[in-house]
Amino acid sequence: MRKRLYLIKIFLFIFVLQSHQILFSQNSTAQEYAYKNEVVSSANEIASEVGVKIMQNGGNAIDAVVGTAFVLAVVYPQAGNIGGGGFFTARLADGREVSVDFRETAPMKSLRDMYLDSLGNVIPDLSTYGHLASGVPGSVAGLLYILETYGTKARAEVLSYAINLAENGFHINGELANALNEYQEDFLKYSVSDNIFGKKYSSGDLLIQTELANTLKAISEKGRDGFYKGWVADKIISEMNRGKGIISYDDLMDYKCIDRNVIKGTYRGYDLITMGPPSSGGICLLYLLNIIEKFDIQKLGFTDENYINLLAEAMKLVYADRSEFMGDMDFVKVPVSTLISKEYANDRMKYFQFGVSRNSTDVKSGNIFHESNQTTHISTADSKGNLVSLTTTLNDVFGSKTAVEGAGFLLNNEMDDFSVKPGVPNIFGLVGNSANAIEPGKRMLSSMTPVIITKNGKPFLVIGSPGGGKIITSVFQSILNIIDFKMELDAAIDAPRIHHQWLPDVLQLENKRLTKKTIKKLSDIGYKVKSVHDFGRVEGIIFDDAGNMKGHSDRRGYGKAVGF
Ligand code: DON
Image (cartoon, rainbow, N blue to C red; front, side):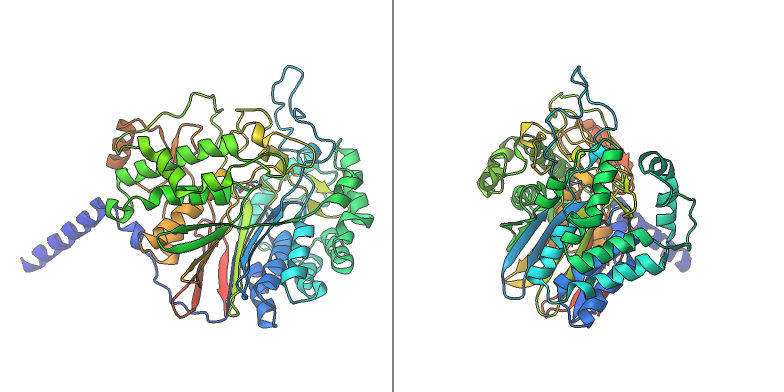
């Protein structure tokens, strides 16, 4: 009898936990802060290990991030790249806060309506596949600049790991094998031959990339001139000629990465630095945090419909402004200081009421959801106090699916991040306007959100993610989970997320986030709820008060945080 009572009590206890929906959100492993010296969190274990090795050999977190990024171009070609671009945000050991924009640029021959037919309709696939989809790549210029300016190691040493892995091969994991097989038809359609990725793969196969190794050697020997001039540039231009692309020698030679001022904000006593335009990521993140700061979300509860209601309404406002105001500040005026001010956030929320879902406008959205996660983020930190957050991308999985023949690397399809026509959604369903229209030499608006958070001047969190338009909300919710809901790093990153981007007017929920009852309540107040696959692959490093670190690579990916 006593045993039965005991079982009933346990059953009731579990039922109460379930009904409060807190079981899954607290299943963290409460890892120790095991690392005193360095941590690298990236989308691939081999790449993270290289980063740690570089630091063990005396390098700093900047050397590590550059070495890791070049290795990702070899072992994670879905997103790691030399044919794409990205953003670097860092807090250096001497206290400087810096960011570098190595985003792709529109070729000088590009035109505002280059993806429209004579009737003004968008030509399918033109901004996403093939030669015309590529912006001028920025990764090589950016990574080398970062290394020369903030690193300590020689280029040849930092690149040697990537060269070795390309030349001698590495055993591919199941994720890469599946991805290569899935996109094989596209490679054969858009790349000249099957000499890059043109066969069926199985997990464990040895992947040797001789052409890529030669390109990396040219970069190692000649620096940026090994890519933007010489035989690699010749190969890029021949590839453009073959596929009616418009990137020219001048575009390559003139490509510049740009030092940008970090944008700064605060949230509940924490200090944040992040990336400004041409990324929308930093602005949107600070704007969201400013909105949420006014609410006691811990009291609302992680899975409460009022909390989801609040997040969704905040996201709608922020993404509506993203669409209207944000673009490359070298071409358009972006009202950054207003957008990241607490007053503006307050003002925008004045119509907010719990239990009410405001309609997004009726602009037709196309209802496109893109679920890939093929951008990639690297977080690195060292014991000297250097903190680095770097996000890089080809845009879509394997970019434009176009490999540069003879040079062994894929080109991005970043042109699709421009607003190819006002109000027409890009592959992530994001709409834009004239602020993000195509202009020669302009950089397309991004959502990449590399972030560094400190508390009282001490390192606290290095974080970032892929996920297209969902990058911002993935990083945002991970931060709320840590600061407000006091979750451990792994639980905070792994917890199911929600997403609303104003248009389409849909509340997207990762599976298992909410009970049917809560979803019904949200539908009852007007949300069009859609269940979506996992999104975002957050890479994070967190510090305790004594400066010890631990890292976590999102359960949604196959990456790993490695430390020492
Ligand atoms: O810069 C951007 O916002 C996009 N090109 C990022 C693409 C991305 O995250 C792909 N993964 N879903």
